[in-house]
Length: 388
Picture (cartoon, helix red, strand yellow):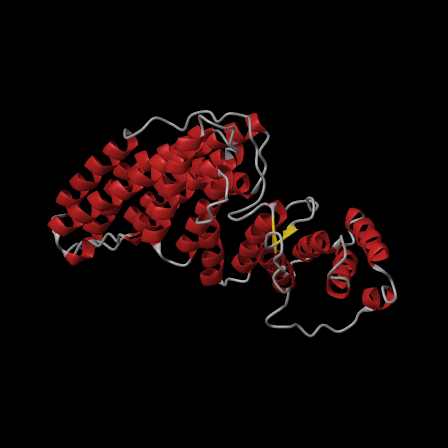
């Protein structure tokens, strides 16, 4: 391969990418959300759910298919002999005081010993929440599973979302996907809940490596949002998350394309570079749409990701093996000219990182994405200083 031919290709690609889009728009300060990829934990249970079955029908039997053997601790011994009202009061007070292990013990004991109590459904839910707070995901999952399977109503639906959350943290992605799929197909699910189920199913599918299924779920979620947004006020968290994760799908495709100048095939390198640039632009488009939804948390994350795309492309180009046939002097000249031509990518990454941090300051966002952006900006500025 002619080194000059490769450098010409890189120059055209870098200039085209640098001019490809406007900088990320300023996100709206409204609608800040919390949490990560999956459901945001609630603080307390809602009103008790209703048993499954209509008039004249018996509720489904509540059972744990795979019982756990849990050794009695001090909390359990202290709760011995308490009735359901006492256990509910103890659990509620402990949860409010931040003693989530004691709360979990009280609520779990109530649910196990007094299944007919009027507090039983709420105890199941609150036991799950308390176990979540101490990252006891398997114990939390069982409480949510029992509530979701044995009752109907808002609590039962929310319990199913929390069950998926627990399975996600346990990395049992196939089971999490199945729970979310059942939620997405429920005829009685409202628009906001169906949107949430589709988005979270897409996240799980992506993490399981099924990019095609993830893209379908996330596209269905964005379509559902477009259909619903004019008819009811929806939380902007999940529409923004859907666009962010569509960006993640194409970011994975972008990262999968390898640039191999050492192979000596200029035509193939040109095709690979074009494909990589197209994946970058498609991912960037989804991240920009995530910003435009207006949720500050996802806006900052999306802005950080756009900067990382240009950062990564610069690293891929400068870190690729040399074309064949270059002597030491030619190699030095090649590296110097390559650095000059791809400097535009560093400049664009720096500009996007700066705009992301400015947006975070305006909207009061302070999370892991802000810190990552600060670190990346410092590194890129240092790189520019080193090249200068």
